Image (cartoon, rainbow, N blue to C red; front, side, top):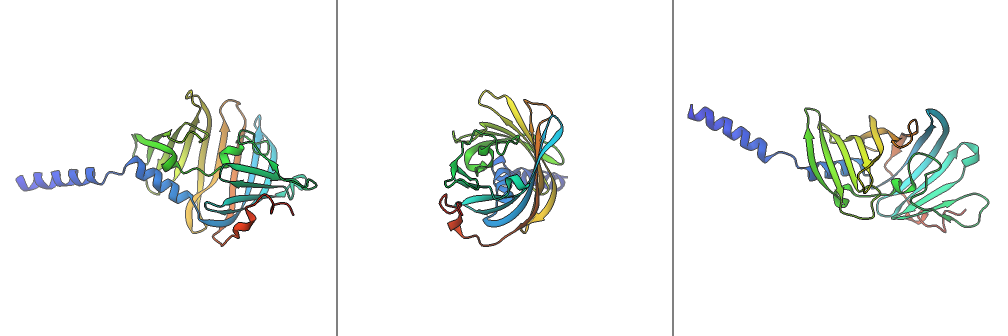
Amino acid sequence: MKHFLSIILLLIFNQTCYAITAEEIVKSVDSNLTFNEGEMNINIIDIKSEKVTKTLLANVKFKKDKGTLIEFLEPAREKNKRILMVKDNMWMFVPGISRPIRLSGKDSFMGTSFSNRDLMDYDMNNDYKSSIIETTDEKYRLELKATNKNVTYPKVIMDVEKERLLPVYQELYTVSENLIKTIDYSDIKDLGGKLRPSVMVIKDVLTQGNETKVIIKNMIDKNINENIFSPQNIVR
């Protein structure tokens, strides 16, 4: 009997010792969603009052800690427009205009339900303090509170699937803890050698029926010339 009790206690002790922490979950999510450099094509579908109002096709080139360059391919009226993001700075180049236009992070991204600042590259583990607030058989629910005053959302609630440590849902809150947006992640695929959600739906909680869907069509891990991440070089 003593031997049996010892085994039970040992199993309980081991499970306690190896229980994953909120910080480890967020680190894994960051790692699973982050790529060093590469290129992808995305569709952006914007919906207003439950009707599709805009569909965009864009090519995205990115290099970690250097920048992201988005070039629009469709529709014709948006073709060759480019948006450059470097840290907290954003510029747009419009054909026919000689200089890039500096963008505000607060403005809507191409008239969609997410802002320019939503696209900026934040490190959740370094920018938020996280805690596990609920655990089920399939997922963890985390609360993230900002430690970096420059992040867009001071509070985030995030559901993470246990098996692959990928996000499935987020709630985004203001300083006064009002819910303003939700994000649903789905359709996990191998993209650039990593499993990650290929579909992201951002819903505007304040305006019912407004949402934006981002679909990653393909992604390749490749070397990107960092010289393209310059406001001067996006004018061509």
